Image 1 (tube, rainbow, N blue to C red):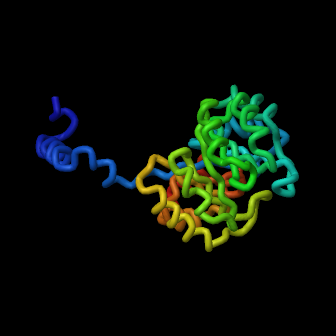
Image 2 (image 1 turned 45 degrees about the vertical axis):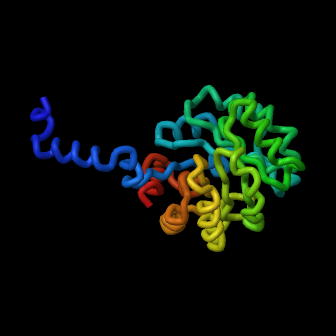
Image 3 (image 1 turned 60 degrees about the horizontal axis):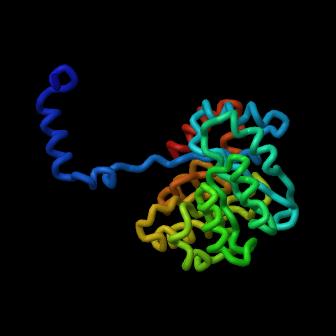
Length: 244
């Protein structure tokens, strides 16, 4: 009976609100920001343990930065490591390809277990074709924009993407300072997507202040490296950033 859970006045209020708002109820609630810890800041000597710890700590995605030493001046990990980590967690793998020739690596990372693949427009001659291929292979397609890349790069592929990754630092290294000019880019892109089911992910320089700024600008997902890994209490760090 309803009275065993709450009084009848409360029940009538719930019914009244539901009848009035109907399908619009979700728009009145503040959506929870998603947190994607970046393995770039993890302990590479114990990546498997780190992935499992992030899973128990409540990570929504695990962000994997792939660098080839050409597109960015750093080298990180390849599909073999992604494949080795995949059985250790049900959390989606969010793979960011910072490589000179994205098309050459898409299939290998999806076969290894990537759920989302982000590519930079500068790394493929035919961006729409690359995005379509990512989707055809069973992953979500995302476009990554470096700080100097214009939102215009998205104009003709908005119907081909599931996510947009906006870099608020220059790609290549963790621990860089947040570039505040990118907040306006986030706002512009939020307007561009015009209600499409596209997530906006923001990567770089996350802390209490910057997390709040990018959330207000339209971000749905925050990539965080140092903030998550700076202490051993990943559960607390993820929760604190989400509350920001």
